[in-house]
Length: 518
Image (cartoon, rainbow, N blue to C red; front, side, top):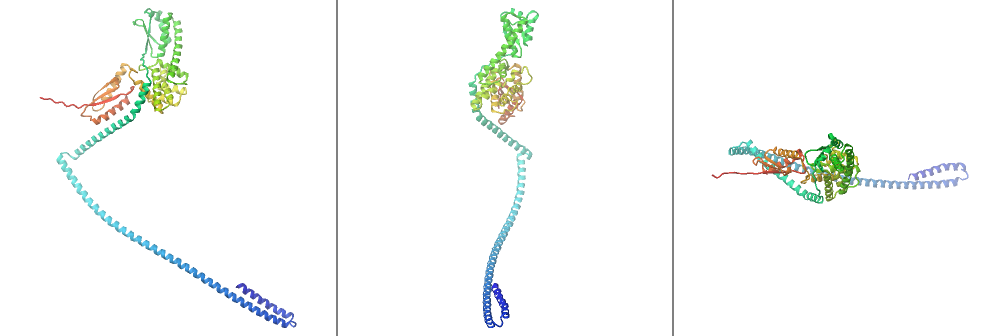
């Protein structure tokens, strides 16, 4: 619309400018024509202006109508939003009002409940006071009827409860031990019995002396020699004491080192056969005997390894194993014992599905320290462990050697099997024998330990110290106490004594009533 008005005004202005110019140029010549043209232009200008004004008015009306419609639409939209907000606010107010009403109701219910609880608490306090009064009256009445004070009654009750608890503890200990034995005995007995049946070894008791038979008593003088030089040379070369006494046709060789004793025995027997007995010949025979004993040890070691199925052992260890042939422990030959332990450990490992080769190897080497314990300081366990480390044995074998007497904790099942095999070999009847002094001291110590417990009347060590029978005073030790007493005695014996195998603790309680008919 503004464009049309501008155009009309421009036309008018143009016309207004053109008219005077035209008039000034040809006023006289074209006066009429120009007037006519001006009249026509004025009419056209007016027409254009009227049309422009009309168009502008129409556009204005249309714009006003659009503005009014837009205003109406915005107003309607605003009214609708206001209405929705008022409705939402009304709903929120209703919900808040409902919640307030619900809270008021709950508050009233809580107040009523608190009042009820307070009343109940008052009633309970009253009843509690009544119960306390009745309890005091009952206690007084019980004391009057029983003639016991409350402290005495408490002591009686505590004693009764203690007896019941002691009974339950004894029963649980017995049940636990029974279950453990039932679960373990079946497999253990099967494995051990199978291993023992598969390994039957002879046992030979040896001492610290050897006896050499002589063809006649005249040979004793030749062995002694002029001024005793022969016997002194032999004793000096071998380190063995020769005992020439009244025993007919025999000479006794005495030494704690079995190897030296064997060298002396072989050398003396060869001298007797040869007949030429003098210091030079004695030295020659002793040297030959040493070489022969070395060969014997090597052969015995190889035979033992072959018997046990152990291969790849260092030659020095093989020779030391053969040296065990001349070593005894409590009368049991150390080599025979090692072979038996190796075989038992291997059989047990096979039964349990473990490494039988490692078990046999650890078993044959478990007492290797006894081969050098006469020459070096330290226990045979320490010496054996050092030897195994020196000759690069596996950690499993080293731990088994180190742990077979419980000096360290076993770190593998092989070590546990070697412990068990060692105990089986040492504890079987006839395997070992002790000196009379050691035997009697062990029995005395066993009886002293059992007699030290309260309620023990007397005790007897029987079955060569493998069982102890403990007689208890029935008035001081009940049936339940017997279970605990037997367990305590067993633990103390394990802690304070050293013995092969195991010792059975048998606790006996006997009640006897005697009366006389007159």
